[in-house]
Length: 256
Ligand code: NAD
Ligand code: 0WE
View 1 (tube, rainbow, N blue to C red):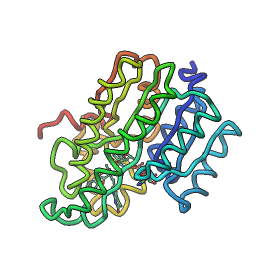
View 2 (cartoon, rainbow, N blue to C red; view 1 turned 180 degrees about the horizontal axis):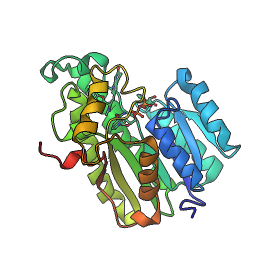
View 3 (spheres, protein in one colour; view 1 turned 135 degrees about the vertical axis):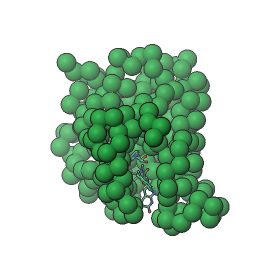
View 4 (cartoon, rainbow, N blue to C red; view 1 turned 45 degrees about the vertical axis):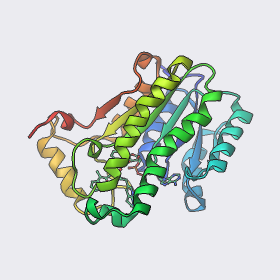
């Protein structure tokens, strides 16, 4: 029943107990994986230590701002020193300056566009490249995306464009890393009430909209994202790479 026994993973994107990264990390841990965690900055250090600290002494907890190449290098150097290898990587990181998610896409500044793409898309390329030398037994890289990459979701704006880049990057990485038996996939999640979603004007209405219109007539639960994370990490998904898997109560199939 343990799908990930003996696997080593690194998790980017836990901010608090509501984080999608935490839901997937718990599911990976439950299936027997040994995990390292990174946190964005000192502000989040305590949160992540409190959550991941419960996983025992084999758990590494390291700082990493994904826009900093030296911090990424330090994470993978410490992962190498402690475990010697790596099988799993979760990328659950996104950011755009708040004003870019409030006005029109037309008014996106050069700087907001750059930041959104650096944090939310380029970072996947950077961490995948750093992970590759450690994934000597093959591996599974999972990134979080959202439907605003393919259809216009009002106010998602530059984040939608950055998610389109993340999804395309997933396909090119899947091609480059396929010969090393490293798979790269995205989970496209329906809306979940996390720190990144809170404060978004109209988020509660968006949850209601999914309840009214998604085939399953309900919202996605964090545990369900965890279960899909386990599947993509496991040998059950051994021939799946470069894909976007929708975990959205079926919302993505609808035309109206
Ligand atoms: P969250 O706020 O819990 O997680 C976002 C994480 O990104 C945080 O841990 C934050 O520290 C990290 N981050 C931001 N800038 C960073 C940087 N420069 N360096 C390192 N880390 C940085 O929110 P979440 O909803 O769990 O978001 C996780 C992922 O899920 C994101 O990619 C998001 O786009 C995606 N997603 C969220 C939803 C949703 O409705 N919540 C839906 C689909 C996809
Ligand atoms: O990817 C996301 C949100 C990511 C995000 C959130 C914030 C809020 C705080 C990126 N950058 C920031 N910057 C901040 O300053 N989601 C999928 C959740 C989300 O965000 C939306 C959504 C949905 C869904 C924004 C507008 C419309 C829909």
